[in-house]
Length: 387
Image (cartoon, rainbow, N blue to C red; front, side):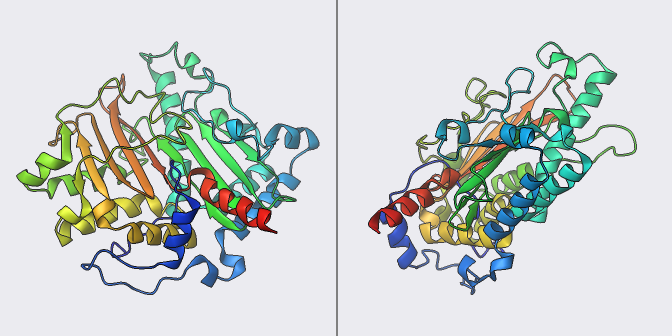
């Protein structure tokens, strides 16, 4: 519900452990406009329903289905930060990946891979991740049906589709309390981490090209239906005075967000400047649209992870949540928007491709206070060093 501003992913800055602990003990809501409801926090959820527990159980099953050679290719050291936090959205022919190609898994292994993914996400998160891969299959078909303007760059389509998406593990759920896995390919980088039973799924980059299927029996099917819409709905609700604050550039920043380096893979400690309009400068109807936009992303996580994150965003307060827009405000041209606060960063870029009939959305969600579970890991190390 929009009334909760909590979020269940993890973004890309650090928050001091002291601040995190203080927030943990000090629960108060800055927004008087939203009544609070009782939410079930992660510790209220039965063990078997907790995302971290389900991920660990299904992760073990997936690993057990692999040969020794596959396990060696799949599993990296959790402490290997440069590997664990590095990803790119370049097609695999131009940038190789760690781990195993999903398209080369056996049917039995692929079933267990899907079981792991379902355990790690909500229904919408699962479908969006798979939509990124399906969209790439569609791009591959398009490339086979006509000359792609970027045919050389795409290596004649060889690396598009499910064959170009990889899964890699960092740590091993069979023996490690802290572990994670990454799914990465041309339009996806999903980073899942479990630390002491708590789960996070950020940073998560996803996109699609084309944005929808343009022909045949599936014409009109849209891979990422609402990310852009939620941003536009909020923008269209703003008054002239509010637009003057929210829109910081009339044109899309061509040189700033390329299709390959969108938001800089890794970019763990990137500092975000607060720009745009603040949540407490919106009226209550507009705030509902802001929360709907936030939830469109945070609820890619399963309910326990999502509600814990949304709770954190709510505690940060509306006065620390910003909405910023770059580009035209009236139609289907290239645009960029951002929502950011101490515990959330959403970036959305709608680009054009060589095909003039479709848009090419790229988007990312991060938790500046806990990307890759970093804050939890710091606290874990602190706790263990005390004993």
